[in-house]
Image 1: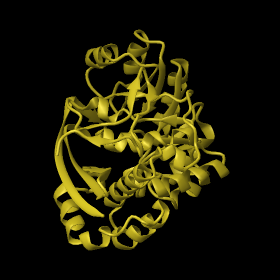
Image 2: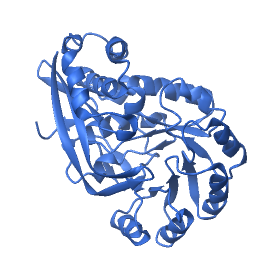
Image 3: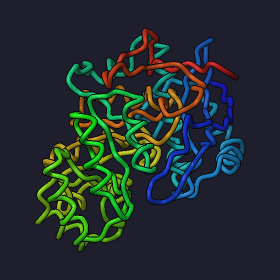
Length: 338
């Protein structure tokens, strides 16, 4: 098995703002694993909040090339365990390797990834489309420019409720709110009352990730369900979240890939938590991997590639929020440019 490393600087259609800042480009690293004429693809992106830089990711991957370039005769779960022994301090790289190996392994077997897990795609679950923080007229315009049955609205401003009130005037779609840790306990409880009146489905990560005392207060008193994001990074966090949230949002790059994400979903199911998988802003390489987990989910956020000015890959597509799987085996991802 041969490793090939690709790096890109993904340009966004529009500047994307959340409570922590604005981004116009997303540096991305694509792992390609090659064997017998087939290629498997996985992705990791640069993220200031989690301290990942593409140059650092590429250097580490190159320095450990010998551990990656083995025969693809391990099942994916065992490959992940082998890679974990070498990349356990870098979940983003571990994710890219895990996605790429699953893709290659199932392409070689000429099956789709969800078939490897004995899953069937659900026609019920739809992805939301994210509206980043902007002026209210611009947020309305972005929503009107992309009709979707579900919108995730990024908040963390001085007029959050006013934003949702105005957006509701222009759409009867499902609204989900993501405050990205920008609110206090009192602000969350107060906003939840108003947002419930506006037909909001749930609030995602209103408080700072380490405020577990505050999270429990919100969990006990909020009139809306609350979903953990930044508070749920790796497998050990799932049980903690059961006492402070109604559900969890798993990000593959944060937890180390599909293998641990699937274990986290199993644990969340045992604990009665709502299950969601979300994306970073990333290409169709990473987004296509997420799609195969959707039969296990209550919610999914996989609009990252739609936010790009130009996607570097093909794979799954979204049609009015509905997931359309590629005809390709594996995850369905194919790199358009080298």
